[in-house]
Image (cartoon, rainbow, N blue to C red; front, side):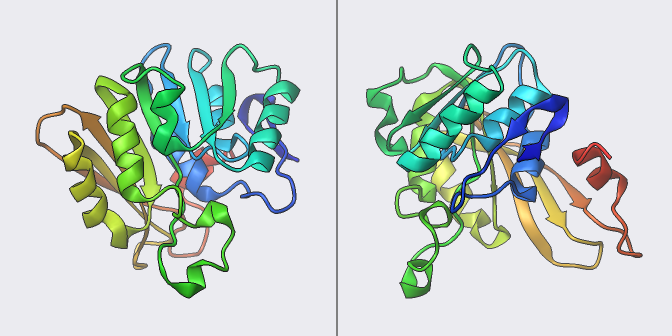
Length: 229
């Protein structure tokens, strides 16, 4: 059992995607408007939704998860934390979620998607780590369809996929607006990217860099803030 900010608890069943630095980074990176309606695409057992509910008491989160066991774990996490009025989980394919939810009705779309793609090695990874049903184009298409005009799509991914993400985003009228490069320490290569794209946004990208550890391998102030240390 993981204890999140605000006393919210997260239970991750065996075989499910665990609480990761990726999700914590993404929930911190996401800027939420007042009373934001959020669609969490590939929501697993509800980790991001719980983190966002802990961060902002006014937001409402709908999670979409294709794996039935992860979806069930999300329902249990929602009930355990008494968040039924603010958070829900739907067991569905994000590629067809517009058939169940109203397109253009979300202020925010957010995703900590699978990173592995193609090849026999990827097939040995759990579904939560493969992009069979959650590839970059599908994510961007769904976000572009479900967001309100001016809404934002936040995601975390590997730096080597940045060009592909930006190319796909532009197809679906999502303009990259903010990019954060994350390193383990100052001299390390970029290990993760955090990206915000705006539906119908004008061209103009700002970027920042973050380090998790200093030259003495001690947590940076940024890291300590992330984990509320």
